[in-house]
Length: 71
Image 1 (cartoon, one colour):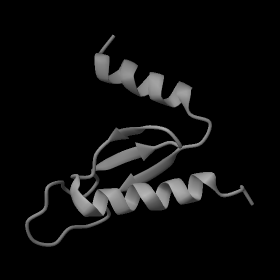
Image 2 (cartoon, one colour):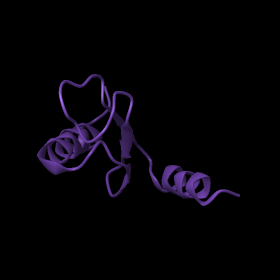
Image 3 (tube, helix red, strand yellow):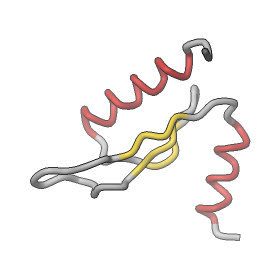
Image 4 (cartoon, helix red, strand yellow):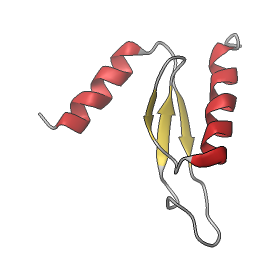
């Protein structure tokens, strides 16, 4: 089996809740294109939206949501 597919399966199996973070649009020079995504769980990250401050802010926001009670 493809190691990326197995890595994704392992990630999904290890998480009870997951947030999808996706690049919805870009303007100018960017490290990733529209549609790039990462999955964030309470303890791990799968993929990247390009790194840097924006990615860290997105991870923080996703984790705030993941640690909040479900409504």
